[in-house]
Structures are given as structure tokens and as C-alpha cells.
Image (cartoon, each protein chain N blue to C red):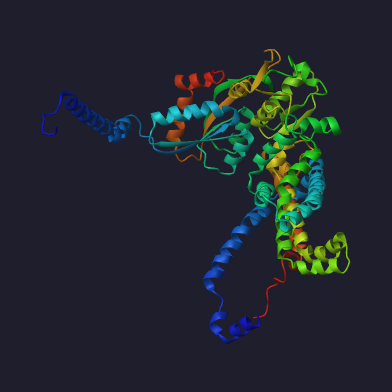
Length: 269
Length: 279
């Protein structure tokens, strides 16, 4: 059997095998070193970049980080999400941050007051507010007025947190007094309490309801009663990687960045 | 012990202070002290009194003291019998029960808060029955704070007391019983005095843990001034709006805890550990 010349099938298998090997080798060679060298000619950005961003930007900025790192493979980007005032305080306390994206201008102003901004902030996104209710809207909330029902558990944030301030403004505009059950530390706390059914309602960013992927629903607040939150972004003056910070802001405000933001429910100016 | 002492006296070389160990220990001491020194250094002392006497600070302090004392009381009430059962009765699955009861010791407190929701929350296992039977809603209430603190703090007491009960010579209890003492009398007059140091140490540890509880509280009980906003929550939130107040509150918390730890006599924390000062 072995002395016979190889059959056609054996020969075909051998050819296929060796060509597969060649293909793998070519791919490895092509992707390995040339990947970084070819991209290197496009960007000289390297090192690390730390972005501090408002909690409501989590989904959008996570996607932007992936896209941005693809364009700048030698750059190691870390995005740190939290309540804007917490992030601002960290920056004032000399946290090594290169870019700050805040959910309101007042918080950005606090950082600017400490002379920690490099250039003026840019408004890169807008967000509107909605009433968040649990899936299926079991409490049958249809308007802001329903929030003042005494048996309802309404949760919000302290007025120092942007969403707490905005929610207060919306209720004030509608001349409603609502007694909150809790002042959560950030907007994610409101979403978690309502989505889990421990609280009945809260006022959050429209984008936050998008991010629950169906665990919670939004009740639209009409434009005349609503508030548009403007998100500023700026470079931090103590940044060790100012070029990368600049590139991040350029990417966020580029068509690609804006498309990602809109995908998460933000408005883009 | 005597033998050891005489050995030390004989070999002078052994009495020389081990420089390397002392140096490392000094680093450890500095590691613990520096944050507190830093805190004291940053406190705006000129406004400290006015920041401390604001209504929000005093409300949080009062609530913290009340809830942590309640949590300590509940921990003793339920923790001592639990420790007793774990130490004395060999029932099947005891190791599993012990691990379950001590789980909240190692759990991230936020996870503890989520688990409390699953049990006592509005949509939890017992949430509805609690409301129908007693008309109480634990989330967002002061009782919820006490529950969260007890959940996190009780294991400290159980661990300490159980260890003491295990180390106890049971024959003293048996003797009391043969002499006609009731089980309760023997526990009260023989066992309890013997484990008192451990009980006090465990209670203080549990109390300190309850006082500092943050994660489970903010998850389960939320944050509302006067109702669920304890000192740690107040510090965390003031950090954003009023860092000066946060620093003052931190110092007050540290002072309270430090004072209690300091007032604990060494013998309460496990025998005569007072170091000999004479060389």
C-alpha cells in the first residue's frame, strides 16, 4: 500500500495543507510587525491617555475608546467614569488625568477656576431628561405630575450632582414638590434603584434609559418642561500627553465620534 | 515562660534589638500614620467648629451613633447564640453554615447590599410579607441602615466569640452543672465571665465596623439626611460639594473610633499583652 504512488486525494490534501500553512505564515508575517509600522506612519501618538468622563457617558465613551485605540494602537487609553463633581475633585487633587468630559458646565468651571484647563472647553454632546420607570411602567406614570403622588418612591441625586440639579430644575419649572426617598451618589444609583423595582421613579438622562437595554422604560418629558444638558470636554493642563488628549477630543467631535454618541441617544451640536 | 526568660538573660546577643525588623516595623507605622497626619494637616481648622456643628453634620453623627449601637446590640443578641451553636454542636453541614454566616465578612459590601435587596427589598423574598405583616419597608429606612450594618458587622463578633468558646475548658461548665446549676445559670456565671474579653473585643470590632459601614448602606438603604445618611455617606457626598466639611467629619469619625480602641484595656483584647517596658 505504501509503495504505491500517492493517490489524487492524498496529493490534494498535501497541497491544501501546505498552502494553508503558507497562508498562515503570510498572515502572521503581514500582521505582526507591519501592523504597527504601517500605522506608525499615520500616528506618532504613544504612551498612555487617561480620560475622566461623566457616568452617563459610559456606553458611548467605551465604544469611542475601542475605535480610538484601533486608530492609535500604540496608545493605551483608560477611561474613568464617575459623577462629574467627584471626577472634578480628583483632578483638583492632582489625579493624573489628561481629558475631562463633564455632564455640566458648572463642574467644568470648577476645574477651570483652579487653572487646570488647557484651552476653553468644547460642548460635544447634549442630553435631555426623561422620567425613568421600571419595565412595564407598573406605577402607571405618564407625566411629571404623577411624581408628586405621595405613595410613590422617587429617587434623585443631591443638587451638587448635575442630574440632581437638573431634576430639581425640571420639577421647579413644573411647580411640583416631590419628596425623594434617597439622594443617590450618581445617576447610575437612580437607574439601579428603579430598574430593580426598589424605587418607582426618578429623573435621569434619556441616554441612561437607553443603556438599561429594556430593564427600565422612559416617560418623555415635553420639550417646554425639559432641560438640555450640555456636556463640555477639555484638556487638563497638567497632562503629560497633551497631543493624545487633543487627538481624543478631535475624535469625539469627529463624524465617527458623533455617530457613536448619537447611537447612545445623545444630541451632537 | 520562665525558661525562656532565663535563656534571654544568658545570651546577650539575642537581646540586641533586631534593627532590620524594627526598621520595617517603623515603615509600617509610618504607613498607617501618614494618612491621618495628612488628614489633620488638610482640615480647615479655622472653620472646623462651624463645619462640625452644621445641622447636616450633627444629624449624620447622631444617626451613625444610633444605628451602629443598634447594630451592635443586635449582633450580640443573635451573634452570641450563633457562636455558641457553631462552637459547641457538631451538626451535619456545620462548616457550610459557618461559612455562610461569615460570608459578609469577605464580601464586597455593595454585593451585600444587593443581596439584602434580594431578600428584604420590595421585590425580594420577604419584602412583601414584611410589609403586609408589620407595615415596614426596609429599603430607604433607618431600620434598613441597622439591618445592613448588622449584616456586615455581626461576623466580627461571631468569629471572636466562637474562638473563645472553643478555647474554653468545658469541664468548668460541666462541674457547675453537676453541682446543680441550670444551663442558663452555668452560662451566665461560668461561661460568660470566661469569654467576656472576647465578647467585648468582638462587640467593639462589630461596632467599629458598623460605624464605618458604607457600601451595603448606600446600596440597600439609600441616602437621605436624617433617615439613612450616616457619617460615612455624609463624608463621601460632602467630598464633592464641601470638602472642608468632609475632612472635619472624617476627623470626628477617626477620633471616636480611636478613642474607643484606646480605652480598650489590653486584657480585653486577648490576655496580658502589655509589653515590658524595662529592658
